[in-house]
Image (cartoon, rainbow, N blue to C red):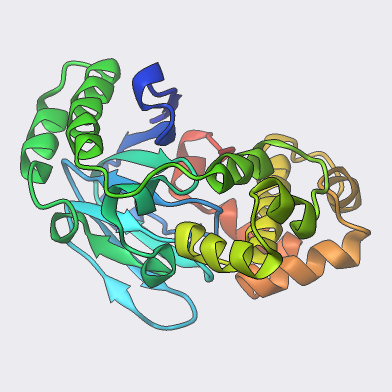
Length: 277
């Protein structure tokens, strides 16, 4: 099994946070467990050049399957992913605001979306998947996708906004930045900032910040399973353990321990790996 991350080239770093590659082959398709994905503060473009996946939304009962490339908007509920026997996904994790800039589609319209990418990026998706399938290694896959993205960027419909850089700062820092301060740094009134943030990021700034904190806790538990939930809560900026529990229940409908137990049954665990990104 492979779980890899690649940094984008300097030319694309304004639009791409990171590339993720997940690749594994199961001997017995009947024994493949599902993966429960909690909400994350990101927008993604995922290519599936081999077996695709079936996605079931835990709260809304929506089901999607058999798509070879998808746009994934900001999620507000858990999605259960059922993968195929020969599973390869190449995922582009966009920088904050980048998907909006590339498509011109208000990001809140993509919330809880698992959308056929060919409906948004009209040209090149089948060719990308064919080249990914035939690539001689993972670095070559990165080159294939970067060529596709470079062509999309040439047709970019929206300009960079200072808010995008500030949103990226929210992702990278553990400091508690007030929404009022962020609005001032973006040279916007609080109301303008909140409206534009929803348009570019798909959620309110407070919700976005809340998801960041939750994801940090989720990843920390997977990276350091020996740590107590209380320690993780304090390290990730929660007031106490109960504060962490409240967010877990809001995002997953489960306690931290119960959702972690579910994650321990994910496909990557069959290969001794853990989701730490």
